[in-house]
Image 1 (tube, helix red, strand yellow):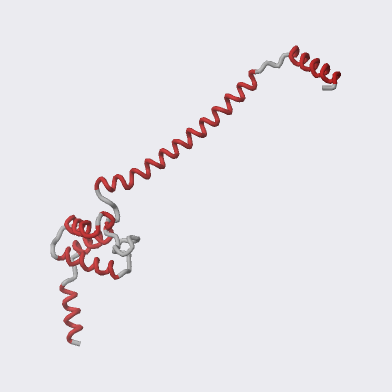
Image 2 (image 1 turned 90 degrees about the vertical axis):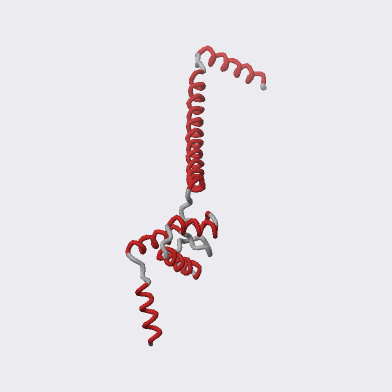
Length: 151
């Protein structure tokens, strides 16, 4: 009984201030759970995520800056620990797929335009052939002559 009162008292004395709680939550949303990298530590329910939440809270309460805490985890786990990569890695991680998607759309539009242009040119070519009555008469005469010979 006395032990539980001491634990509750210690927890109440070590509860973070409102500013610290906001910093803790921001950091928990910026860091991925290292067990599977599928969710940030704020939402993930693994033992590793719980340990990281405790570490983050201790570091914030000890007065470490958000950047120092992020640098600590980046050094420990690598860039993958960040929910949103920083710097050039982040730029590459987000601009390369977007650029590829835009280039694919551009290629698709070019293919559609090229196909439509070819259809229009073929139609113009087919319409450009003269349909003269003399030509049709000569063709009919040749067919009759060939038909008479049994060819």
